[in-house]
Length: 127
Image (cartoon, rainbow, N blue to C red; front, side, top):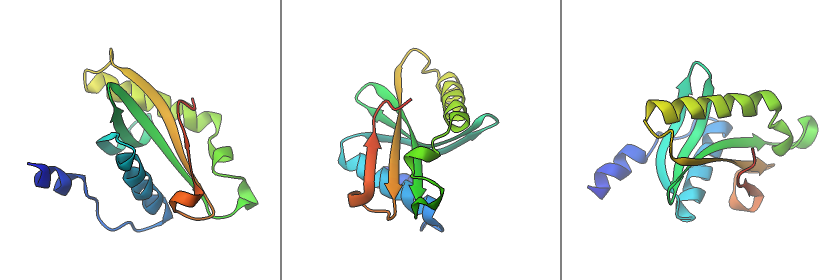
């Protein structure tokens, strides 16, 4: 059974920095003891990069990567519009999955300059 779950969880080889950052964030969160639920939930309201379960709390993760600071840091890229889309998408995901009464939070995994754990910042309950 575990092998089948690992097969379903594994994604294809990342094609770009965004996908590499999401994979690195997913690997990091698994090592932190969170349980993988879903990746790249798309809906008409927006997208959620990663969804995890932290004990009994659903965690909606926004992953951001900035190769250089010319256009701001990864944290600065979390604009009001993006955060609103993630919140609305999460509300729809909770409704579709009949989890509206479950606890939830919104985290961000940020990478500045490189996609590795030395350049990773995990902001819990960031918005």
